[in-house]
Amino acid sequence: MTIDWTHFTPLPALAGGLLIGLAAALFILLNGRIAGISGIVGGLLRPARGDVAWRLAFVAGLVAAPLCWRLFAALPEIRIEAGTGVLAVAGLLVGLGTRYGSGCTSGHGVCGLSRLSPRSLVATLAFMATGFATVYVVRHLVGA
Image (tube, rainbow, N blue to C red; front, side):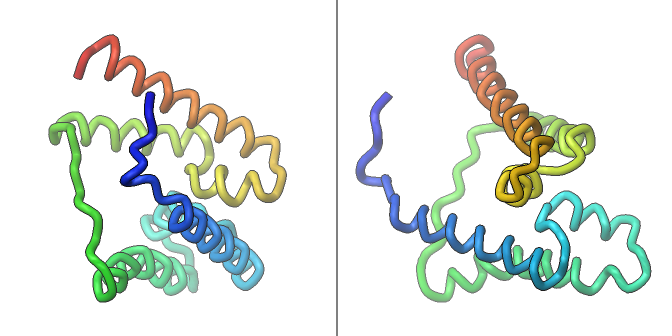
């Protein structure tokens, strides 16, 4: 395996990670909630009274961020090397995993690990191991 030095961007990646960490910290400090995307979006499906506005604002921010970025620079090319069926199955499996894991990678991997949650450590290790195994099986055994 080699590193593609032309597309290796450690400083923008570091800046992005710092912004995500800062946003997650501010969210829990100012709102008292974990910035777990699956929980936030899931709360919109069965909304509690007075609980919709901040969830909509959060999701709107997720959608607006790349649109704002486009004002200053070109968005990266989107290249998906999978068919619609594979993407649908993958999405369903991710959704199932977030239900079994009681959260998603943003909730466990970013917020939970930063709070030193043992449950989040186990969940994140499970997410990562499953991802590694899936890529190995799909790329090397199935040959897709």
